[in-house]
Image 1 (tube, helix red, strand yellow):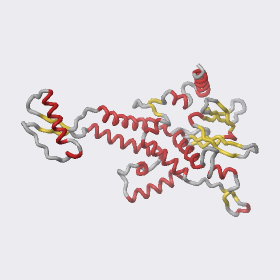
Image 2 (cartoon, one colour):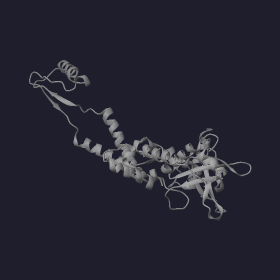
Image 3 (cartoon, one colour):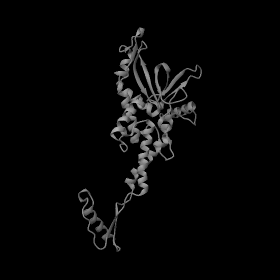
Length: 319
């Protein structure tokens, strides 16, 4: 009961804040996420099980995290700019983000949050002189902006790992929103495109079940007469011993008693399955605006277009 009561309070509070028709994301994830038309439950976490989604999120987060976050100072009388190394934000953004994370790790985490949830949040830690001394990333599915009902001032609600609900003023929050139109919160790319990702997950699961449970043989051995169970067993074991396996590949096959062997190729529906998997990879790469060759799909790659696609990735995706 000590665990159930706080959980019930959290659920009721979430429904009061956002309504039954639009519950908070953490509550949706707790019940398995939104079920797509394919029957797959897709959340920002479960979507990472798809190799294409994981590759895109990893490429974007690592690439942008490796770019230095230069903090510049405008010099007086129009004499240009200089590196503001004495500013407290300089070390936080380029060296040590907090007592447990480097600046690179923080940037990588926040960019992964941004491209997955559409929002990146970090609590700003201040010292007693109100100077920033650290940034601590917060889970986007457990943090959201809202306006105070009385003062209309922007503030942020978040749920700590221990289950505690706290309110953070906007002065103590670093919020980077993605594409969005309400001025407060960005849209989740995975949430908006969950059907495409669910299709990719469904085809991947279909393929796994095909190889796990499929009973499709590689070929059929025909005999003009009816064989007993013992004769079938001996024939199968003898045939597999002589002609199956890597060491027996391409051996001359000798059949007796008017027997014949018929190989079974890949049926048309399974060929279409492979095309579907390939198309879904392109769909996911399109969502994150990542070139296909960067996630391992080299089907349409050439020496010339890879160079141009890499330049376009830097120009139109990273910057």
